[in-house]
Length: 214
Image (tube, rainbow, N blue to C red):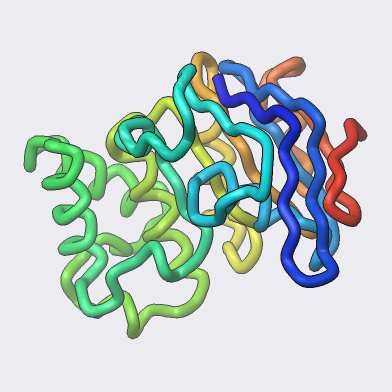
């Protein structure tokens, strides 16, 4: 569980205020909002990349500043989460070392992803920096599923993905969310209904630093 209480963050003229919010297991929380609404700021606060002015963020009952929870999370917010001088397969193996995943599991995962999108994304053919924007995002997002995390946090994951890429992401989310927490942001509407079970999607709207149910 992720809980926010009396959360307040201010930078310049922008203020983010969330009195109370709980992200529970078995749900995908889809946060919709325009540019500058505070979606990315909220994710960065949850991930501990920004520090709130006041209030508390707890993950699995401890402060989000206790970094142990990160081993149980799959996060991709932007290209800074990649290592662009590695190839996609090298990056996957690097993450495998971090999460102590056996090479045979890494190979199985990379082959399954490559087959699903009919493209050798996880290979040593190119460096990550040489990939298209869409393929960079695929590397970051798909690799976040490899260690079977309990929390998934993605910032606008569908933007820039082709049809096969979007389909695979929805498939992965639908398969993994039963006992996990998913938080995604969207700028344009993304219809997850029909692909993900009813009751597993919670729709929120972010506007001017405030969240409401939509």
